[in-house]
Image (cartoon, rainbow, N blue to C red):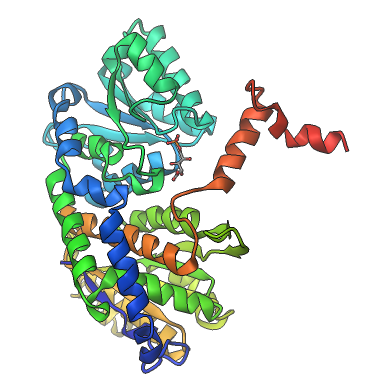
Length: 448
Ligand code: PA5
């Protein structure tokens, strides 16, 4: 199981910490929130208790595995879970490995942005004839996903390849243009449950197809997620990581710490910080409370990589404004390790020679953590006994639950994103999409 260390968020260890009594005073409120969650079972919880989603992905397993490459086309919540899964659970050179080295599993690419240099570089690298494209868009209308879909569709047609042999859609079961095209052209589709928002959708078909394609154990992901859910619902506050993550971030926010840094001491875990960044920002950064009051709340999530950012950010975190709470991600076991050889008889290097890189990296984490504590700055730690599917499944569920709980504490709806939707509408207007003219701010400005 994942381990958590909240000790450096507490007053008894760190001058800027929270008093235990203050945390205890929220016990009843947290219990009420957990009862509500268990009663209402948000969509992202329900999916992991229903085999339907795994089965629908397994149904197309043979079809998926008949390709060499899978390209995911989607953005935001339709992409970040895929990126996190691939980079956390596959080696960083996965796409450069031969088919044998990949045990026959597929290379996986994610095209999210509409930067032409980026899109072209991915498309240049793959053999289109051996590629399956999974176009993921819950709304079936997001401009970036649709533009990239049209590009790959044009490319397939230029090769004389049938779109329905190379494209699958992952989208709303009923709504949106992708659903319409799928029906008229007999394109395979996978459903995104309507009640699960993009950033909560990693364990739906959104993330499962690319995971299965790359040989990631999707059953284990679900096992981990269920374990995290059961622990969150059953355990008392001090044994409840999901609740403590939410409450401690909330209380530190009330004390002026409006930035939440997630600093991974592992290149693989860094991608979980990227996923968290969207989840925390888009869910909790809200103008209005649930009862309609203007409150403008939210904690800005920042990602950082240890030890790299020790040489970039840590000075600020230690001595700059006391406006941050830091979460360290640590792994106790790396997949590989490298022993630093004895090559010099040199006193200033002897402390490194004969040691392992893992030892150095985790010592750097301890050093950073202690320095922050000495400076009165709070931090917590999520410890992966190793980086595997079970623990990553746990991580997703703990943080999704923490976000739902934090939504209640902040009194905002964590499942909507009006700011994102407005930006989408303005883009449609600027690109001339009929029906969105009134969102053309440029025209408004010109008209005075
Ligand atoms: O979390 C969210 O709701 C958003 O980030 C969406 O995932 C993102 O905007 C993409 O939307 P869609 O899947 O509808 O294309």
